[in-house]
Length: 87
Image 1 (cartoon, rainbow, N blue to C red):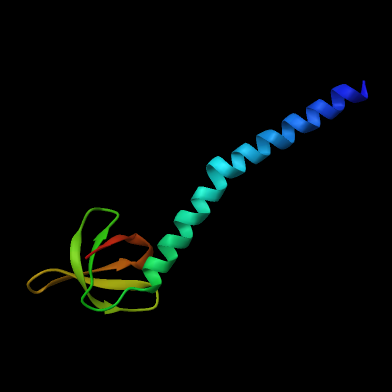
Image 2 (image 1 turned 135 degrees about the vertical axis):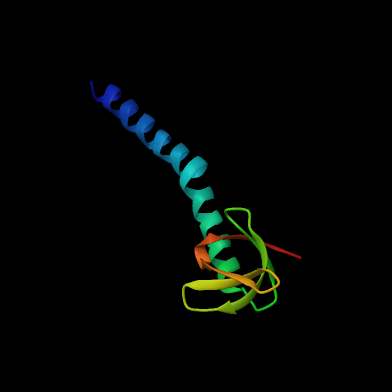
């Protein structure tokens, strides 16, 4: 009977370990990478939002960024909406 309980515990620990390494750990790395990207935003950097809008950072506030998308057209988006920078 105790051998059966031991194997059950081993299976549960193995499943938790697999879930951690396949789901939780990669998501944490992506989140840290995105946080670093948001913190390193500077004026004049070309960015793409999660909605696919391309533009240049023109102003930076605490939680938002103003993006110049065309002549005399700027939009304000959340910093978390920045998907990537364009080099």
